[in-house]
Structures are given as structure tokens and as C-alpha cells.
Amino acid sequence: MKRHKYWVIGVAIVVLAIVAYYFLGFVRGAKYYNRGTVHIAKGEYDKAIACFDKAIAIAADFPEAYCNRGTAYYQKGECDLAIADFDRAVELDPDCAEAYYNRAVARYDKGEYDKARADVKNAQSLGHQIPPELLKALDETLERKK
Image 1: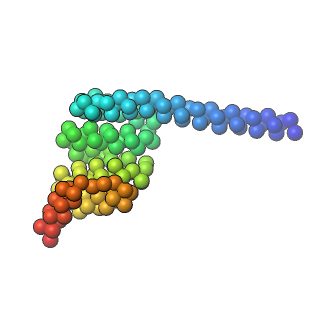
Image 2: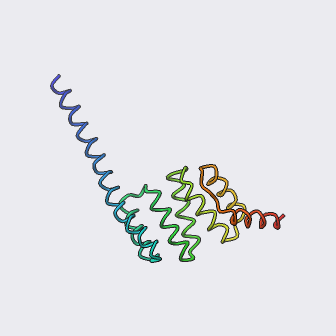
Image 3: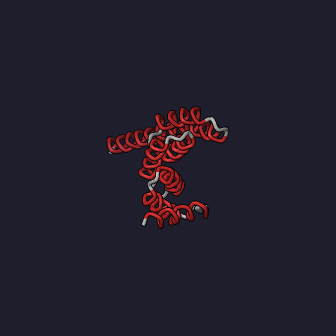
């Protein structure tokens, strides 16, 4: 009976250690994430990307960090890198409306109008408000393609 009690306590300690390790990693990652968002607001996209890189290195399953790094890449005109980050954000969190919307904008700029429209629909289904001018431009472009 005593052995069983110690075994349960040992398992509980291991589980707590794993949870603490994950939580502390997320907190450290959040520190760099917050810095990155400040750099984006200032238009300092290279600094923002460096911060998001650190956040992702610490907490690789941090969809918001991928989404915001994608935004920084997009602002620099690096649509392919931006789309790759938005893809990863959606993989990690299929309910991340912002990632769908941002990917739609990047795809629109690349001329991938059908994919952009699909992303707009996903973002809308998740409650994201799409600017009417984007919807109009996308619909007109797709209509001309027909």
C-alpha cells in the first residue's frame, strides 16, 4: 500500500514538473511576443521578426507568434514567408480568424484570388469582419477572371 502511495506522488510530481516547464516556456515566449508586437506598432519589422523568432524558439506551438511574424513579413513585402507563417498559425489553431484574414490579404497581393476568397470565407465564418473594399476588390477580380 505504501509503495502505491509513493508511486502516485511520484507521478504527480512529474506531471507538475511538465506543466510548469511548459507554462514557464510559454511565459518566456510571451515576453518576446509582446516585444514583437510593440516593434510592429512602431514599424520596426526586422526587430519584430527577431522577437517572434525567439518566442517561437521557446514555445513552438504559439499560433499568435506565427501570425504576427507573418504580419511583419507581409509588411516587408515578403508574401511567401508571411503565408508560410499564416499557414502554421492555422495548423496550430484552426479557429484563428486573424490568420485566415491575413493570409487572404497576402494571397490577394500575390494574385492567388481563389485561395484568398476561401480564406476570407473562413475568416468570416469565425466572426472576423472583412473590410468591404477587400470584398469588393476580390469579387470584381474573380468576376473578371471568368
